[in-house]
Image 1 (cartoon, rainbow, N blue to C red):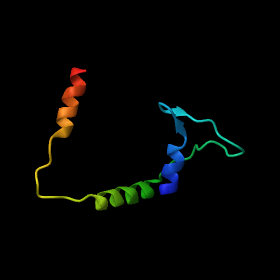
Image 2: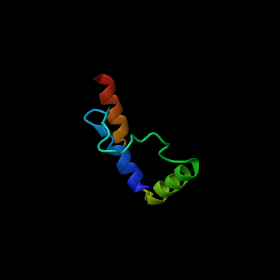
Image 3: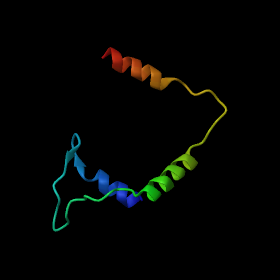
Length: 70
């Protein structure tokens, strides 16, 4: 899965401009993840997160408020 993600990320340059294919390799046009792969990836992400009993800061709300003002 890491290779697929890296391949996808390498397809962009600058501000999300698609890069031109290099060499004889055709552009990636297939699905990045099948439904089963997406499920497996979601489970892996969830397992990687560590939950704590502590209260998380509300940094997101501060950032959203700042974005709204801007």
